Length: 101
Image (cartoon, rainbow, N blue to C red; front, side, top):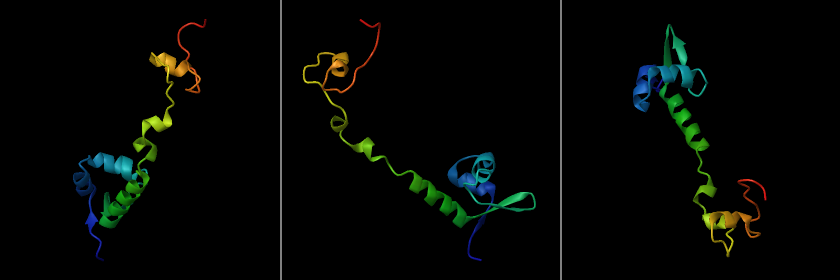
């Protein structure tokens, strides 16, 4: 039995959140495994690590956020105002605002 057993309060302190968050959000939703011993929860340190590993895997950055915006947006060569960019054929779309002509 090598796995350290933690209390809700110990986990809350490590993550700088309230014990209520651990109980009502993490444990109740199944994000963090915990067993009950009497009226208290017992949490394995390995289950805390497993929860962290899963959270890191879900947080894979969106590669589009780091690409050059010029690659994603077409710009009209003859645009004098932002509205001209959208109204041009180069932009591929039309910004509709105000009243129709």
